[in-house]
Length: 301
Image (cartoon, rainbow, N blue to C red; front, side, top):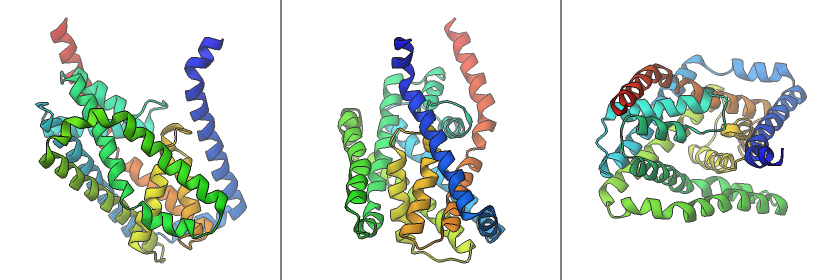
């Protein structure tokens, strides 16, 4: 029993965190009233939501491009088609598979089964995640400054520890793997440009959801608040950030952005919906990847 608990306690903690966060969201909906949330949802223009889907899909393409550049510069002879297939399959797996295994693990497993070099693919995934974190840190001040201006010392301490501690630990653990691309400035710069493109699209999607409700918020404030949410979600206390992302974004939009709780929760739910919808191509690519995996296994038998 003790061995089982030692092997599964992290997974148990993440599932417990997910259920707790979901319960808090349900409680918030009950406190605000389901009618208020429904009213806020009805205020979202369908056209603005569709624009949000388009923008978010473009952001996913930037993610594909970022990883593809890292792979190719690492001497992995992979086609853009395979990179896209693996990326979207990873995104789809993160959203729909009932597991604590992230999409990066799915991407790595798929790349290995397709015959690509395991060590470089693993290093590229680490670099891909690190570049995303570094890029997102550039917009953190736009949200952190107004958050700290709330004047709550406890909140300041929590914010600083949760947002930056995990980031520093991650950088320390993965800097060696990232070293491959430090000697290749052009691919590294291209990857960062793709990251900034991805970020710009995510922030724009949130912006369009907000103005689609007839509200207004500064684009840069949205960038800062989403960046804070991103880093909070990196804390491994829920499965794929479910619940934690929605609670964090709801809190930040209401406390700093000036939206009501029902409006903030509506935006948080819809942005999650955008991520889910734009991961659907992964379901289309999954059969092709499985077929390629099967062919690769046949060659090795």
